[in-house]
Length: 425
Image (cartoon, rainbow, N blue to C red; front, side, top):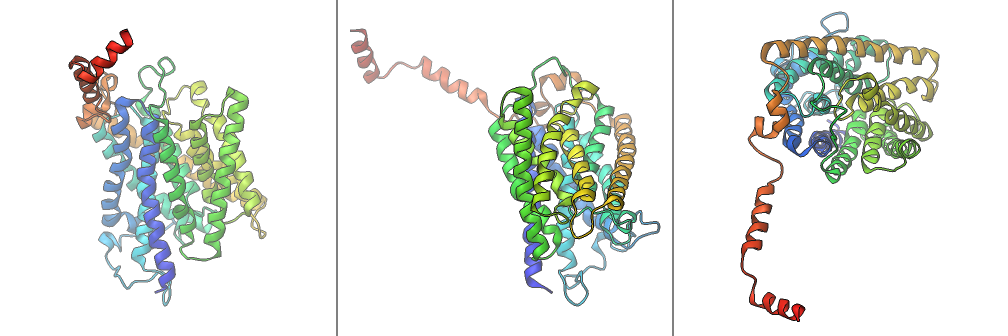
């Protein structure tokens, strides 16, 4: 066992795990007060559901030997059968298979959580949990096999996706779009103000995502080496450039540099560099970030023109950002990798995942809707899904109001009365 690489991958897995709570804060601050806890839980529940499914059959379907055609892994590792603490990924020297499996588990848990922002404020929590269960089984596990397993068909096509542009971001973004089209728009969409209730919470979530993304991207090298260092550097500079690109576009278009724009731009840069970061140099990473920041800022406005209610801009950031990063590999990759041939491969991979994920995600969302109803009732949506599904609220305003009322009703202290007499005099 290579101890240094093993430690690096385990630490990276912990960083990626932190991204899901970070995402919960990011999304949680962007919704209205009455939906805050539900938004947090829609991300958080993914850690529970996917962790169990990954051990039961997810790892085997994603990273087991191919069943044929490069489409799906076999069932040899159901329940992690045949994988011992001594099993190594590289034969005589490598990291434990369990360390690799844990690292990939965190990717699997994050991906469906990304979709939750598109459906904010208006879906049943039980229906969402069922949808996650079905979606990772039928969509994520097979696509991960296509992209990252050596006998997956996109891997053999030589599509470059270092850390998840297709398998994670395009997959989640187009899946979210399909689910939104089934569920429909929020009550009051384009009529009522639906502003973020806590921008500090959004910034905290963005910061945690940025921090955890070093494990997501650099950790995908699966070794403490130069590839990981290059990926870490490119992650940082692309994210900074994307934030600037978003803010400049926003200032030109809307006349202000907003904190929401800064946070969203950073996430767009993180998304776009994910597939490309190991194949480009730092200047290429900056260019990817600038393009992603400006284009994603423009793309989020499309929902109003096209009439679909992507509540928290999952499509505009993750789908569009994932496509940008995936395609720009063919343009900006160094060491002779880039070119028209590679661009064609990248496009084939991106659109194959988009087509499969959209169709299957739509069918799954439609099935959940028919079986148990995906959409919250009108009363629950208007009054708030926090109380409807969790019997809690994010902030206890009644306690503050009670203290204020008690203070107003209480007699003034003697010192205050004396002071008041001086003021009157």
